[in-house]
Image (tube, rainbow, N blue to C red; front, side, top):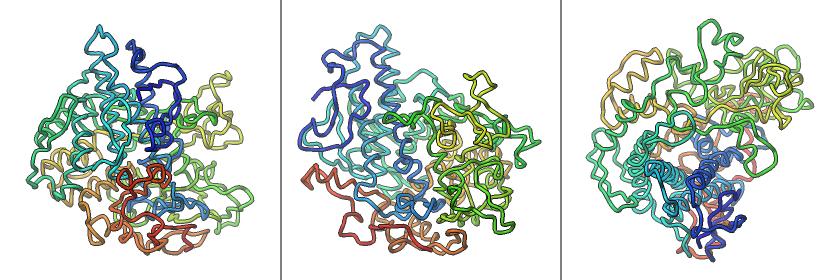
Length: 616
């Protein structure tokens, strides 16, 4: 099938295998196909916008968004939320409450793959007057195909994959290690060679983003699948990667040179103060927040000089349409301060007064669902002498004047993620189109007096800060880890005001945990440091098991965590961190030679099923 869609909202709602029509589940609204479309460069740009928009589609369901999923699955975050939030608890305990729990994640992976592949194999329908424009657009598309395949394989392992204009029939699972990763790395090698434009800050991929993502994919491949251990000292054989032009060899030295290209030639720089990466230093909040006032801090903003690739948002979110709320940062809503409705009676135990998290009483942080709360073990492991700790974690009971543990909270140790939390201001930011004053992307602390964005719900809709997927500090730390040198790691530390240290594998592990906390990388770092089939004694399993017995607040009383069905170590060992493939997709395939469930999942695995939330 060669249908091509530029305006379809969901090209792949389900990946079935009875026919190509079932697999793509697409509707041809325009009557165009690859015989006559694309015909102009504008057509390709329009299609490519659709490829990028899948990232916003992921954000519409944050608990399906890999960034959020991997935070919750890591040892640094709890599922959190309330006693009825079965999905966040299931994710955090590596269990399931629904045989199709990850249906949206699966759908979005294949939306992205389908849209990107369509462009790649039809781009030369256009008679290009400017070959450099063609190469840039092709490079961006190859980058995005690799990006979605990397997310798909890290989420689900061996998945159906194809490298042609349309999905073949049938489209069976491919082995991630031997088939998919060579294509991922090949796409990124070729993307880096094709792209020349420096589109830093606008949400588009660049050659530097490709070189950075190549390192991330390469390091996961070598660490997880090849069980290479410490990459700086490991003897790593060249990898045969597959580009559109054929096979070529990729060495560690080439990956390192790519990182050096990003560092030296990409035009990126570390933001001077770590706090300035996060939105609580915005100009309308910074001088009213005790933690930041009087320090001359200035929010670096969206598309800042440290960001290499990010998801961007705009104030056009809507409750209508499949991606409408993806145009605001729903992850912020999910990690905001837990709030119950007024009838729940969130009472301060010290004063007897009723307070509601997220208003002026907890300035500058806003209301939300309280999911992905910070694990107490991270707080305990992280030295107070590291300024990044207070910059990254809100110790809500001690930092916020009237924070309360709500009457329905669960897995809430009182620690919240400052990097993503909704931020409020003490200034009235009336919407500019009303003529009432300056408009900003932050709520006022009193939502009752706010004339917020057009969807009429500032709590759920006024979140517009980028989700940063790759930034320069990550690249610098990858360079130190691959080379066994401390120079780049110490530049990252120096920015935080920390002294230089020598390189060791443990030091670089610690540095990645603290510098990149809550940025969606910790879980896969643990996986690659452990290697596939690591068992209950591997680094990832041991780290995750430390959640057992950690302190949490449950419905207003302090207690300790325990696993919902067995143990974190056991669940990790059973699954290697891969998710449950939606049962609906396996049923559509109807053939285990085409698609089968991952180990550790399925109705026969008793400790994979968690029907409710743990009672502590």
